[in-house]
Image (cartoon, rainbow, N blue to C red; front, side):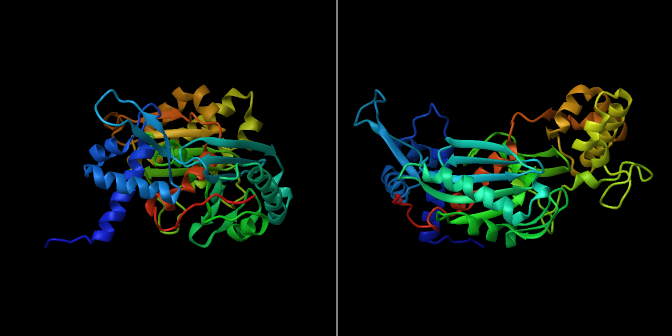
Amino acid sequence: MQEFVSVSTQRVMNLRRVLHEVLYADSDEAITRAAIASKVQITRATATRLSDQLVSLGLLHELPPVMTGGPGRPGRVLVGNNNLVSLGVDIGVSWIRMMGLGLGGEELFRKQFELDVPALSSEEVFSLVGNELNLFVSNLSSRAVIFAVTVSVPGLVDSDNGSVIYAPNLDWTNVDVCQQVNRVIQFSVKSIEVHNEANMAALAHTWKRPGCPSGLDTFAYISGGVGVGAAVIENRQLYLGRHGWVGEIGHLTIDPRGIQCKCGAQGCLERYVGRQALEIRSGDNAALVESARALGMALAALTNILDVSLIIIGGDVTNLFADYSEEVKRLMRLHTIADEQRSLQITGSAYEMPAVRGAAIQGFQALLDAPTHFGKFRAVDK
């Protein structure tokens, strides 16, 4: 049976395609209306109309005309509007990190300050976050518009309801993050979200900038800190599971008679490769070899279950893998089914602050999915 798409639906689909083509383009590629018509395979008139609409909405920005050497008038280059801003916030055990990204991919600010987060109430933490965000926004151009604030937290997150259910290393239980953010910011936003830290770090490896894929479309990401988490990306989409809690690899049992974990179980991976464990074992080669073996066994289990061909290791675990990669890989080969046929790659993260970057990128996702849903973004008065 043939399915029919309404004219309005087709128009929105084409609008999304035009927006994605512009954001996808390399920095040295001049995307004009003529180029859009060719890439999206629509008429020049349609490309002009859709491009004009995206400029009118405030999503795209026009640069001065570019001479192509061909006949006709020079085309005006279209780029993502960096005055449309998404703010990312990553709350760790010992730091708060923040980043502002423009829709065109420009990093507008980055900040980290050390903080003993578990020693403070969530209200106190978000008051500090609000102070920093408000200061940054107050110094922006009068033409800037903040679209989203997205918070990254290491723990079990209910993103649909905007809350952290349980983040033991922060000592948080049932914290309404979106409400807290809304309480402390002094500027308007269209979106406030909260997501798991490992998931946001994985997104930073999936997208070079908003709307522009990195080329890594299916992989697992391991995030090592005080706790250890994982994220799974399949076809550039996060695999979240029924409750959105996929990836709690830190409490995978390595040895049922092993070290007691604060979760109540014994022999959890976190007790071998978490930050505190690695600090205690620092300089003790035999103990670090044991940690490397625990990591190898966990990665083998992950590979057997998910059938991924790429694992990216980030955070504190990166150095352990770099120093003991042969032992990690030996244990993986020992415990991975059909290891020789998998062509598995393991690599360290290239990003210093992936979770906060991923959070800022995630903030634009709703806009990229529905470019007309939020109306026009006009310059705001300061």
